[in-house]
Structures are given as structure tokens and as C-alpha cells.
Length: 342
Ligand SMILES: Nc1ncnc2c1ncn2[C@@H]1O[C@H](COP(=O)(O)OP(=O)(O)OP(=O)(O)O)[C@@H](O)[C@H]1O
Ligand code: SF4
Ligand SMILES: [Mg+2]
Image 1 (spheres, rainbow, N blue to C red):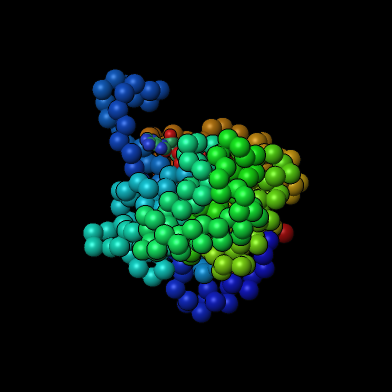
Image 2 (tube, protein in one colour; image 1 turned 90 degrees about the vertical axis):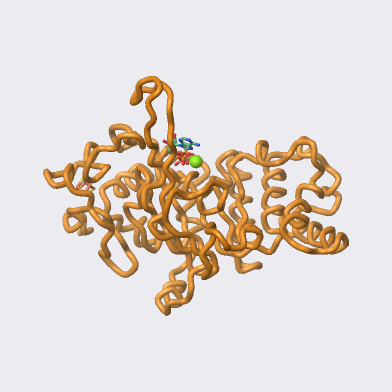
């Protein structure tokens, strides 16, 4: 965990680098599934009203089980898919709306994906991969494009001799370094990192996490880090937001949320992750019984109620709002008073 000095600037009302307001991404799906008869259309509420904020130079980790909507949230914020409704503010300006400067938004906000094998074009040499966003998103001269590409490559710990290599001539860690070099080449302010280390070997994961810390300090970057691994969130983030079935159910300073969780779902996640060792454990593997609810037909009221040991009648009727339970610590639970740590 990276200290809580950010709270000072955050509370002094500095404009956050990223802010979303009631952001939704609903997909229309048709066909035959467990929940759907043939030909009928249903709505998949992958992201269902998410409001988050990332202070400048800080890391927000979004954690949650598979299928809870993390990648959809990342792709929606990154304008790789159109939001259904809600607002996205990047560096104080609303983006993704008519009249907003999309090119500038892409230049200031870049994404790093989980699997470099699918995010890097196998036919392109490393130099061209890194130069591509510079050519598309900036008005730099050819000479400057080449200089910037080399600068980015060196910043991620690879030498100029890598410029002429193809992705298949790189190790997994080197490929992810190239993906990061491409992302930082346009001097973005925000990187959206979707499980950036989970496709890598344990020792390489540690190196990439260290590199991300180094780059953040060097270039004053802000990160939105998507991870299913609480230990990675603990290592890299200042703030954590816990996502469940398309909603944020708890958020706050990482130390506070991971040491004194107040939402029953977060408590179960933390309980299943006693060993803060990011290299060995899949931290969401045990403890919580039952399945993540369907994004097509979630249970009424609090979506966690079928799995929650604290649930009472109201929980299956009324959805709890996010409410402050401590400084910057928000929890969506009717009975958060029962989960105060002793
Ligand atoms: N293009 C799409 N069309 C329809 N449904 C989608 C689409 N993309 C995602 N979904 C659905 O949205 C929900 C959230 O998916 P998402 O990939 O965002 O989850 P995730 O938290 O990133 O999961 P994981 O940890 O496995 O990567 C799932 O129910 C998924 O099936
Ligand atoms: S609102 Fe009810 S079901 Fe939901 S987390 Fe709180 S106690 Fe559990
Ligand atoms: Mg995902």
C-alpha cells in the first residue's frame, strides 16, 4: 500500500484525473441461453451505475470476481465501447459525448490489456507497435515519433535493439513491457490496466508490478487497475473499489478497506486472501458460497443477498445505497453497523 497522503489533495477538492457518474453499460443479447428462450432479447447489465474517482497520480484498484463487470467498466471508461448512460470526466472535461475531443482523450488515456499475445500485432515490429499511437494521436514529426518510441522503450527497461524485433521473438514479460511502452508513448495522464500481470509467470509478475510503480513515480501517472487479486491491489493501489454484479459495493483507502472491510462481500474476499502474496495465490478462490448472480436477471434488492450471511428481509426488497462509514470509506449495505471491526 502506497500511503494515504493523497487524501490531503483529494479532500482539498483537486479535480480528479478520472471521474465517472452513474456509468452504465448494458448489452442487448439474443439467442438461446440458460436464462433466455430462442429469439428473445434480454439486457445484460454488465456495468450498472458506477461512480468512481481517481485522484491525480494515484491508483484506484477495481477488484471483484470473474464476470462482475471489471473489463466492461475499463473498456467503457477507455471509450472502447459506448456507454449506455452516465458521465465520464477525464482531467475535468466530459468525454465520449458529441463535441468532445476523442483523439485528445485517447492520447491522455491509454489501456494495457491482460494478454500481450492478443494485444500486440504479431506482424508488426516493436518500433512500429510503439510508434502507432504517436502517429494516430499526435501531430509529431517522423523524427520526433522515432525519438519518443525509443524513449518509451528505454523507460520500460528494454534497449534500442528491441525496436526491430517481432513479438514472437520476445518473452511474455518483454511483450508486456512493449505493451506498456506503447501505452506511455503519447504521454498519457491515465493508464487503464486490465489484469496487466495475470497472464505472466510469478517472478515476471513481480518485475512488471515494480516497473508500474517506477513509471508512475517518474511520469506522474494515474492508474485504474483491474485485478481479481487482492494482494496485487494491496501492493499497487491507494484506493480500492470492490465490484459486485455491475455495482461498486465498497470503496475507500486501500489500507482501510483491506484491513477493516465493512461489506460482507469484501469481508469474504479478504477472508479468502489471508496471505498477501500476489505471486502464489488466486485470492478469490474460496470462502464465498454460491455463484455470481446473472447479469441478465440479478436478484431483487441487494444483489448479494442470496449469498450473504447477514441478509434480512429488507435485503431482498431494497437495494442499499453507498453510504459513508468512515473518511472516504463507502459501503452499500443495510447492515454495515453489524460489521464494525471489534
Ligand atoms: N460484448 C458483450 N456482449 C454481451 N455481454 C457481455 C459482453 N461483454 C461482457 N459481457 C457480459 O458482461 C458481464 C461482465 O463481463 P466482464 O468481462 O466485464 O467481467 P470481468 O469482471 O472482467 O470478468 P473476468 O474477471 O473474468 O475478466 C458478464 O456477464 C459478461 O458475460
Ligand atoms: S444489504 Fe443485506 S444482503 Fe446486502 S450485503 Fe448488506 S446484509 Fe448482506
Ligand atoms: Mg475481465
